[in-house]
Image 1 (tube, rainbow, N blue to C red):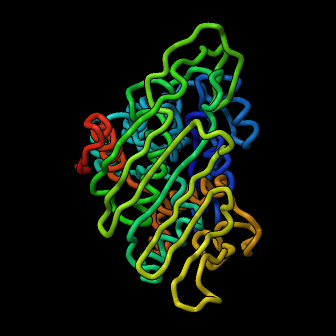
Image 2 (cartoon, rainbow, N blue to C red):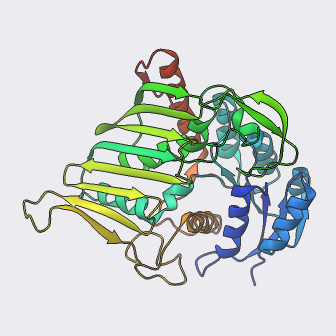
Image 3 (cartoon, rainbow, N blue to C red):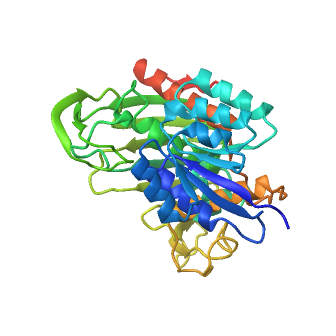
Length: 391
């Protein structure tokens, strides 16, 4: 009997809990067996609660314990971006397989060092761009790649959230750093990867612009988990990064526009992409994640226009991913974390890649995403000038 692989999650905030839950649901007949060993967080009660809730054997409060643990083989790293490099390099050096939450890190030099560490490691290092695992987005990418829709002429993409709408949302690491480390890094990293997943690599950007609507935030009186609102003090600190970012992109077959915001009232989590191609169009909206819209121009008035297609087992990830794999059952972002964990686990187990089900993103792709971010920052600093992406 094969010994199960031990799994740990470092970071028990909002995304950390999603990873912890995903590992519990990830095993299938195509994956090696696993043990849910530890959830680690610097706040003991947070770590203990997450470990108990998701069925892990123990909790830890120091990430170095995970590095040294002989019973842990796979680790999700879900902490502040600036901490990624130190943790990931230590885990890889200790022989762990690492699934790191996006973005890869904060700076190009740190990202380059992480890419080098990943390439030198005998174990796997992958990056969590979860929206690649949305069946609707993957289905559109396949329709582009197989010629059904054909090359993308232009694309419109936005990611609206409202977690920072309130001026009383407490100060945290999310609101510090230079312009480009706010909404652009948090939301834009997901969205630029989604655009590239469908249309190909972003070669250049232009029209970069930032806006900070809420310029100061109150200090929290307790520990802030994810986007939670906690009791705050009457002491304020300045917000130094972006609430909103917008820019144009160029990719091999066309161009498009991208906008991201953390202050979009009424939009808790709206990632939407619409692509216009040689043979038609397609649209995905996270508010209706169980369907996509397809548009044709056949000349038949009974067929032309947008048609809603319910996602089902004929579309990516669903047949091997959901207990009830039928059209109309419903799907959401939490499922994407499960599909991502399963894909990583399949790769750890040595399962050959299926052409239609790409592996999780590499650290090199994470470095490229940071180069896109830095090009947007440079564009904004030069009155919207065109900037080429250099990595």
